[in-house]
Amino acid sequence: MKPRKWKEVGFYLGANLVGSVLYGVGILCFTTPHHIAPGGAGGIAALVHYFTGFPIGLFLFLFTVPLLLIGGRYLGKSLVLKTLFSAVLLFVVMDYVVVWIPVYEGDPLLASMFGGALMGIGLAVMYAGGVSTGGMPLLGLILQKVFPNFQMGGLLTVLNIGVVITSAFGYRDINSLLYAVICVYISGIVMNNGIGGLGEKRLMIVISEYSRQIREILVSKRNGVTLLRGEGGYSKEARQVIMSAVFKKDCELLQEQIKEIDSNALVVVTQASKESGKGFRHVI
Image 1 (cartoon, rainbow, N blue to C red):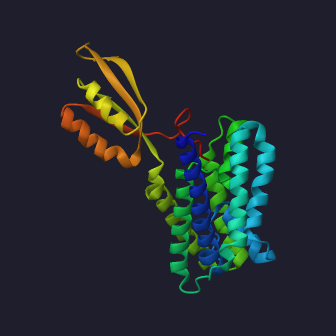
Image 2 (tube, one colour; image 1 turned 180 degrees about the vertical axis):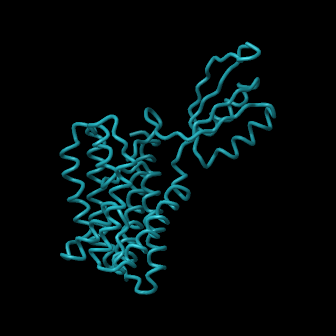
Image 3 (cartoon, helix red, strand yellow; image 1 turned 60 degrees about the vertical axis):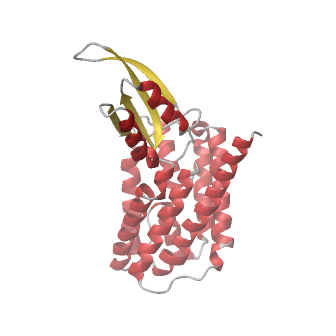
C-alpha cells in the first residue's frame, strides 16, 4: 500500500475512533442522564434505554444492520462495509469504554448544551474523515436511492422532530422537550459551522487573464483544477474559466491570493452539496 494510502486509512480510523468517543460522551455522560433525547437514532436509543435499560450502543448497531441488509444493493459493497465497521466501533466505544466515564449530574441546561456540542463535534470529525455514520442519514439515503424524487432532508427533519416530541411524552416532562430542542440546535450549529468545515468543500469558479498563475496556486493546495473554454457574453472574447473544488477552510486565503495576482478577477464561490470521484471521500 502506498504511503499516501496508509495516511488516508490512518486518518479515517482516527476520525472514526475520536468521533465515536465524543459522540458517545455527549449522549451517555450528558444528555441521557438528564432525560434528553437528542433526535435521530440516538434519541430513539435514549428513549428505549430509559424504558428497558437496553444498551444505547447496541441499539444503534442493531438499528443500522437491518438498514444495511435492506439497502445493500443500492449502497455498494464498499459503503456497506465501511458503515458496518463504524457501527461496530461505535457500539464497542459506547457500551464498553464511555460507560466508565463519570456522568455530568449538574444543570440540565448545561447538559443539553455541552452534550449537543460534543455530539456535533463527534459527528463533524467523523464526516471530515469520510466516516459512514449509519442511523437516520443511512435510512434517508436508501429511500433516496429507491425513490429518486424523494427529499431526504425533509423526511429526516420530520423524523427528528418526531423523536424530540415523543421524548416529552416518554419522559413525561415538557422540560425534556425544551432541552432536546436546545441540544439538537447546538449540535447542528457545531457540526455545520465548526470542525465539520475541515472536510467541507466549496466550488470555486475563476475568470481571469492570469489563469496559469491562478491554476498553480490551486494546484499547490492539492486541489483538482479544470480549465474550461468560455466566451464573454458582451465582448465575445475567448476566456479561460478555472473550476476547482476547494476546502471551505482554504477559501478566504485563496481568494486573497487570487486578488493579489489579478484584482479584476471574477471569483464565484458556491457550496458543493455533493462530491464524488477520485480524490473525494463518500460520506453519509
